[in-house]
Image (tube, rainbow, N blue to C red; front, side):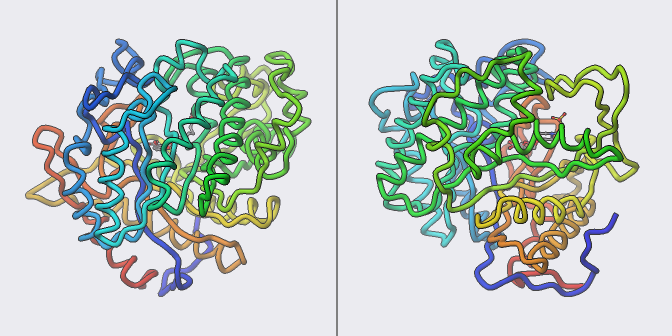
Length: 454
Ligand code: GBH
């Protein structure tokens, strides 16, 4: 499939920003330093059988100790923005109470270093590393976690609010709830569909309560990041069901102030939704300044009698998830740039008025480091196609403000461990040597030109 935008010179609007994204547990390491307590990902990854190769984020890219060289490298690569997440268990090791100053010190040093190099920080408050103590009290199935999250947001803002403009609350609550609580592929590893829906609501309530705190404290820009997918297939009814379970279950509460009635109906055998209290949806739908979209691959579905539910989508029985013939990444995900145009134009049409940012897009390939070089032409082609697809959406009138590539460097790919490499920069985990791949050097030219050359 094509991206909808021909090869050739393409220029993005003035002020459009380019950068990369990472997440704390995936890069920092230093899991036991400066007062940090375990998160659910420490517990999960230390549990045999949960992560490929038994890998953990114990050391990861050692970014906690190497952030200065990493920021210098970003600057060398011409990055304008950097999206990173803050590890809640560094800030409040037990998930509540007074801040651990040494945890805040690290992020203050990081943000100052970014500013010194002219790179705009974009903060994610929660990228999946819930303090284990909160999980022990029910985690995201408990309303209390939403309240603790808002307190944590206020604590972080109190230290960094004078130097960070752009705040996002959650990364991909779909993954936290459905992979973490619904089927157990991710931490905390619970496989209870009913718990997943409680987690959806308490994550969103946490977003709403944190947004109120950030607003009251004077935050310039507040948003949330969702992993969304365009859904296609021959049967409109099947498309609507999966679109509801994957996209609308988050988009509607945040941007319309309601859970989609068809989703509530379809999931009644898992939950009575009694965790939704009066006033919650008003909090959840407080206006956001930006919606972050993470896009990797589209979803194709077909109606198929007798098909058991896909474990990641409770309520999807009778619907088969099918793969197209397209090129696949090392994750097995189809490469479909046009899906990004489709997704952006759909969100802009159905949820108008909110500026969009691509907070993640990228791909894992089987990179090989040879003589100090990684010739990752497939990643270049992937990014080229998706940048053109984003440009096509801009041409169609979508208010897209920036593009953050996943990821700055190879890192701990959750349940896949270190074998899957998403970085623009190669990491040798034995030496911690960073080597910009060809894609990083290519991306530097894209940024310099604010667009693509034929
Ligand atoms: C993002 O997750 C994460 O934010 C980031 O931390 C991660 O490293 C990166 O992407 C790469 O994985 O789950 O079987 O339905 C992306 C998660 C991947 C979830 C595609 C939905 C579809 C296959 N998404 N996935 S399935």
